[in-house]
Length: 165
Image (tube, rainbow, N blue to C red; front, side, top):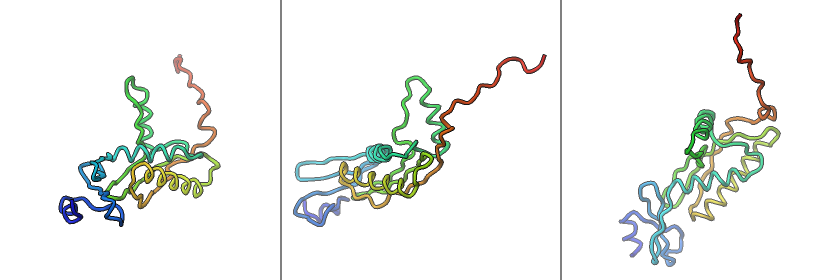
């Protein structure tokens, strides 16, 4: 397939070296690597899972997701047979050769948020580029909350007896 034929079919070279024959095409929720030996499709959810795991590897990340998604995730985890969403707190846009990633975090109290964000960004970019071959053009990070040490302490139970006599 010539480079012109590939462009007509929606594929473009991923590198400036057309002699390698590596192409990436977009097909409904997946990124596709095309070589002379065949095709490899990478679903958007795969990129999201990789980004989520890479973010969680960084010390100081307490949890992933914004307030409501964490609440819903917590409820889901308590239901029998329902697993937690491994992509909670991660949104991705995957193109033919590039990916943009949005991450929502809860950080541990005491962590330097700028340093943490840079470490998360660096780890996510490294893992996605290594594992998927996509160029990560941006990783936007939103710190939605901070986890305080007293949040781990059990709340005293309210008396359950009658309130009136």
